[in-house]
Image (cartoon, rainbow, N blue to C red):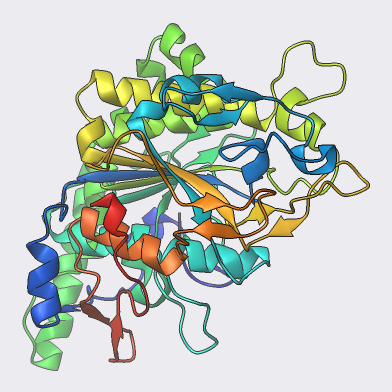
Length: 438
């Protein structure tokens, strides 16, 4: 599914029936562009997987637990040592702790925005929200950058939903994510509209394509122009005709053991799908795990999953199982060094527990995890203060993060891209390179 403007939803098959926009051009800058593209870390990542923890995960219950602090700061969970000497994670991140020597942990993320939609936009685009323009997400920038050299598979896939800030903004529908939803029954992930409607077959589809070509040619003759049908139409036809595309989204091709290793919940299956897609060189995949807005009873939501659970099946163990399996599989397949894996949400949570046993929004400092794509291994960047209230050193803004990730993904963050009203818009206006990440 595509969504280019609020309230307007387009399905892939609609692309065969409606008009479309052409790709927008990139405008390079001068010396900064040369310096960026010559940088040692430029373009080391062929693909990127974002594990979006929607709602704002608590840094104190995940990557930055505190020990020698009052109980209302420490929270209900203990800690676990990691493969990085002297570094502990929260006790529920068992698999991640064993893989920490592959990771980069940033403990000093900071943002001024504490409302979900605004904070999402800043984290995912690197731009402060603006009333005059909707900026594209990093995934859409990558899709726009890579699309010309890509085949039937979509350049940007999201599962099982799209949140604020993940869209293409002014880049338009061509750079929107291809959405893989959960089926109504059973919760399985399903890529809709990849099969023909009843009564439609390949020969009828080809006749429609030929009719479209004739209509386009007639229109161009009347207008005195020359050209060919839009790449969006070509993409839509190609997707409907592609057996490889249907196979890529078919998780039943994986063994029951592999599916169980990731976990049978939607997030686990989304991570398995992400692995299958980057194996096929899809440049950008986002997997959303909802529920991290833990204003109350965080033990139930983060660890237990339901009242009376004998074994935790909440957000943290579900994340740990799926993310750990994803990282292990990518490494075993020789894909980790060329695939960025990023786990983050829009902000952190308050340093003190509230009276309802939860934590509220806290953007002043929070944490995130990255690995692969040529990033340093076993690195903890920055730190929060004693109680996790503010950055203690090396603060990192979302604009800095997107600047650095663009460079790793082969996009010059100093360049500009044309908006739909003809304005050259900086890809990254205010960010700077995070030097420690190379």
